Length: 321
Ligand code: NAD
Ligand code: SER
Image 1 (cartoon, helix red, strand yellow):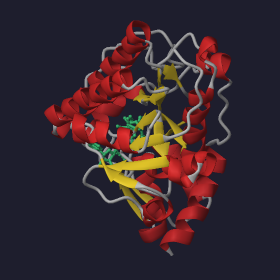
Image 2: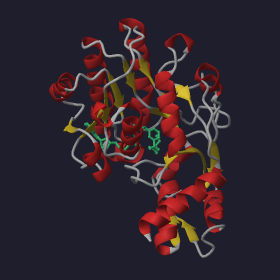
Image 3: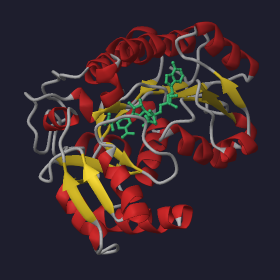
């Protein structure tokens, strides 16, 4: 384990919902040229293209990963490349390939090249129907029913194994559903909590794919980015956990979200037509105990339902209207 600082970072999955914003805040902090945006097939945003290096890097291809890491003298990888829950149920073998084989390539690359750190998000999808759903404890039953969830649990365990066995400093949080205005989500179960804002602003109506009483934990993007970056900077000797930190911010039902948006857009009409994603949502927790993250590295979110909704509507209205 080393105390070397993180100086040159590769973000995989940089065209995705989180990666697209993470690259920009990392560039602000570490310098534009020191943060390489790794992409697969999807093109990154103009902001990313115009502010620093972009490289094709399919994490399933070890040679591509090694090449970027060598050419840019990368010491840290934020692995944001993944297949999320809903797409993962349509394409379970692809989800395994990217989330497991791809992640192991990242870990092997980090081990062989003695990188300083690997950051790899997990998810509330690591939990399943046998897990206590209210204030879900840090240590609890992990029996997910989705392929995405299976890969998230296995990824947590694999990361912890690489830490203990090989001294690779791998860290990660179990993100709740992430809400943001920059890049739409890439095929998850919590996507309705973002789509409702776009549709409310553009059309004044939204057909929601989960029931009105569906409660899930959510988080606004600025908190999600701060959380991951703060964990990356935390002194390793303070960490009892590594790849599986519970992380919480706010919890609300789809109906409560609609009611909050209606305070700003009173004409909004929401209907509910649950599809296959309802069963996934029903297998996940409603609220999360994140005391380990608070205790070990000082996690504290800033946004609640009301402040997140106001900010989302301001940002999306400026973008869409
Ligand atoms: P996303 O689907 O928006 O983006 C993932 C990106 O990975 C996409 O741009 C995709 O093109 C890319 N990708 C797919 N296969 C790839 C491959 N083989 N090589 C390289 N890139 C590849 O996902 P996101 O929401 O930005 O999620 C980032 C991380 O955060 C993931 O690990 C995800 O599990 C986790 N997470 C996200 C949420 C959320 O609500 N967004 C919640 C919990 C956890
Ligand atoms: N937002 C993600 C999903 O729904 C949770 O990991 O798949």
